[in-house]
Image (tube, rainbow, N blue to C red; front, side):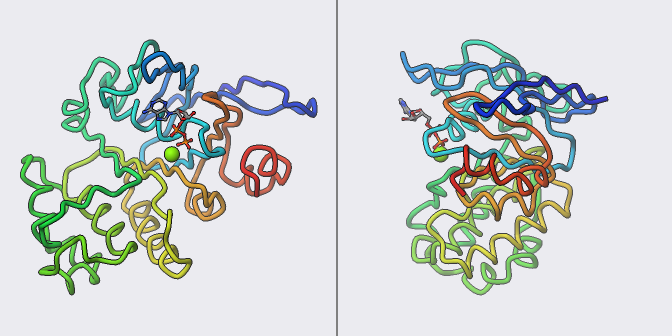
Length: 256
Ligand SMILES: Nc1ncnc2c1ncn2[C@@H]1O[C@H](COP(=O)(O)OP(=O)(O)O)[C@@H](O)[C@H]1O
Ligand SMILES: [Mg+2]
């Protein structure tokens, strides 16, 4: 059963703003989050089923990154209200390191490649925590480009290769949910296609994923569902196809 709350947009049309799925794997329930005195995430709710890919979209400053940071339980922003459940476990009571142990993995926008280390050293360090996901050899099988550059200093990789390494590091740990913050940002179109292939592989492996992207069409093509945010609130929640098919919605909230 799906429960969809209806709300009207400025044109008087009904848009779905909150969708509840009864077999949710990750459930975000009315979360509110603050950077100091700044009220940023203002009552966001959505659900993801196991193995689904969800596009979290919206204009610059809409609160997408802040939402991902809240879900990953980083100290900032502060969560003041609401609940987050992953596979039956509460995340809202956890700190970032505990959420990470529970299988939450955020790949931030800046990719956080560790300077002074080779590609392989970056991968080995990702596994130190003990909960191992892909082995180094499995990573190399799926990312041949990283295998070729295993002894190269990671900071000397191209932008696309750094993004591959950031994703590979995430998958070198045993994870339940992957958050990708603007994985295509700053990359040439041909490289975006390569990263898209990798995201497609991640989807095919059944890893539950949230993609935040300015390149909404590229993200939607790989997604099952979409949530659009505006000024810290959810303004649309539905299937990815609904957004691809709805030019007005895209124009109003995504400027495409
Ligand atoms: N560290 C911070 N301190 C205070 N305000 C912030 C901070 N980071 C982001 N913001 C503000 O929060 C709002 C949402 O930002 P963000 O979540 O980064 O948006 P998006 O990722 O959708 O572009 C913006 O108004 C931004 O200026
Ligand atoms: Mg952002």
